Structures are given as C-alpha cells and as structure tokens.
Length: 153
Length: 153
DNA sequence: TCGTTAAATTGACTTGTTCCAGAAAAGGTG
DNA sequence: CACCTTTTCTGGAACAAGTCAATTTAACGA
Image 1 (spheres, rainbow over the protein chains, first blue to last red):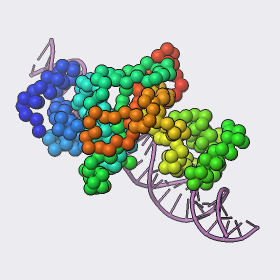
Image 2 (tube, rainbow over the protein chains, first blue to last red; image 1 turned 30 degrees about the horizontal axis):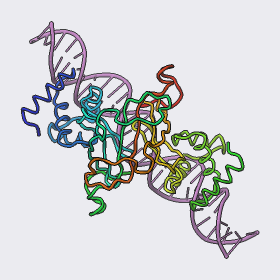
Image 3 (tube, rainbow over the protein chains, first blue to last red; image 1 turned 60 degrees about the vertical axis):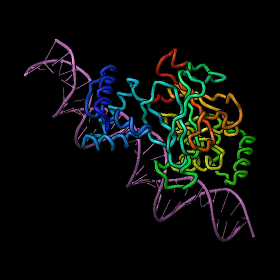
Image 4 (cartoon, protein in one colour; image 1 turned 180 degrees about the vertical axis):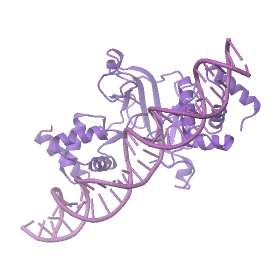
C-alpha cells in the first residue's frame, strides 16, 4: 500500500504524462512498485485487494496506456504471459528462470541504449537490444519444483 | 522442394536423432529450410502444398518433437506467435521488425554460448543469453506498411 | 457545476496452442 | 512379410492471454 506521499507523486507523474488520475491507475502503479514483473493477471488480483472490483479490461487499458506513455515497460519472455515493470529510465535486462518463470533485473553491462550492436543489421534500423538470460534460480535448483512463481510452459 | 539428396540427408538426420522418418517430418524440415522463422501456421500451410492434407496437430507434434530432439529451435518474439528455425548449432541472435514482424538472423558477436554474462547473476545459474534486436526493416521504412510478413501485434 | 472527453464496465470474441479419444496408417524389427 | 509400436489422423473441446464494441461512469477544465 502506498503512503500519501507516494500517491501524490504518482498522481503528479500521471498528470505529467497527460493522463487522468483515477483509482485503478494509482493502484496499478502501487502494485507494480511492490511487485515488479507482475503479469496482468497478478496486477488485477492485487489491484482488487486495494479497490474491490476492477474489470480485467480496465487493467489491460491502464497497462496499455502506461506503456504508451512510457511509464511502464512490458516484457514478454517466451512461454510466459506479458510482465510489467516501472523501471523504464534505464535500459536494463532480465534473468528468467526456466523452471518457475521468476524474473530478476540485471543492470545493462554497457549502459546506454541500444547497448549492443549487431554485426550486420540486415537493413534494419535498430532501436533497442533486448537481452534475456535464461537459467535456473536458486530456489528451483535446491528445493526443486513447487517453488514460488508461475511455472514456465 | 527438396532434392533427393537433401531428403536423404534429412532422413539421416532424423534417424540420428532417434526419430522415425515420415512424410510430414521431412516436409517440415524442407519448409523450414526454405522459410526460416516460419510460424506453426505458415509451416502447416507450406507442408500442405507438398503433401495435401496434414492436420494442425501433426504439425505441432512434429515441431515439438524436433525442438525436444534439438533439431529445431523455437523462438518467440514478444507479440508474435512462435517461430521455428533449423539453425541450432550456433548461438546466433535475431533482428525483429517492429512493424511487420519479420525476423532476420545475426551472428553472435562473441561466439560461444552463453556469449554474454550478466553483471550480477542474482543466484541464477545462467544457461543461455538470448539477444533480440528490435528495429524497423528496410521495407517498412520505405514502402511503409503493406510489406511482406506478418504484422506485429 | 456543467459539459466534454477520457476511462471503466460488461460480455462476447479472437488467436495461438494444447489436450483428448479412438481409429487408421505408416515405420522399423525380426 | 508380419507384427508391434509409434506416429498421424479426424474432430472436437479446452485453454490462456488478450482484444473489441457498446454503454455507463467519472475526471477535470471552463
């Protein structure tokens, strides 16, 4: 749950991005601050613990608006539903657990976007390099299975 | 369409992987040789031009068997259905067009897998680093829209 | 406080993929 | 060649994630 201070700063952020300030929007930002890399479903669930009934559509709309406004970044590791995070300023990358789907952030090795250049661009104009490190997290190695998180497909 | 020679070598490859040699399997390999990065749907369509009726399930079964045997690699760029390619030996990467979804290969800059190491592994054991370069391909920049390929979502 | 317009609601729908069952057809082995 | 097993078939049903469309509700500037 957010403090008044946090809420005020989020509301300002929304206005700054030209978006109206509404309960669902503040709640989504709050949820993402607490649970980075949450799926749309997980966001909906958490928003509902704060506000009561909120439609699935509202969640998708809010997330889409945030992504369009650059307030939220959407990542979509293979075999996982889309995940959302508020860390957008830097061009960081992700570690994804093959067993449980857990996602962790890694700072970009080189700093500025696109951070990596292809050896041959095949005529493409490159905007961004996305790096995903696939592996197995600590919990899935030791406890094996039934660890927290969504199982990978 | 494959030459007899190609077909023979593919059949040998299947046997080597402990898989039976069947029409649909050879056809899928043939299609993937001609159309790297094809989606399951596109593979099905092309296989049907070669063999007539082939069920969607057969295609999914064949692709899954190939992926399990390491003969085919499955990639899943955000916003696109899964795509399949036969280039599995090297750890190369991909360029994806944000406008039309087209995928192109890029050789790995560093060579051996995992080719990149995270600055902090957060307790994960890293197996592989996947790099996706997002950009806009030549056709989508010039002709704009209606270029070949599947439009990105 | 009012009107404009963005946002939320509801519920059906699409897409990509998987699973299921039983029957038919191949492949490889002896 | 005959047999056993794997693979494929038809066809459907189910799935999860996400989208569309029409209507109602609410934010915020005038």
